[in-house]
Length: 51
Picture 1 (cartoon, rainbow, N blue to C red):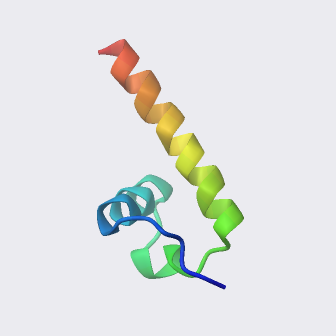
Picture 2: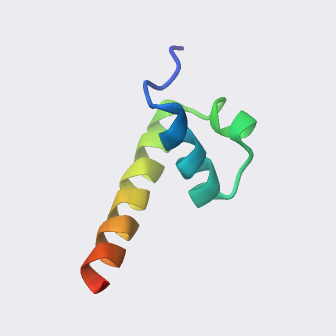
């Protein structure tokens, strides 16, 4: 399986959002990572609208 093509910065933000170590994040299935990226984007979008 190919690694998910995301930047190191995005990987760090996603690991913090999911509250998992970066090492665990890199071994997760891609479909879960993409789902969590979508959730993180929605949360960030809602936070920006509230500000």
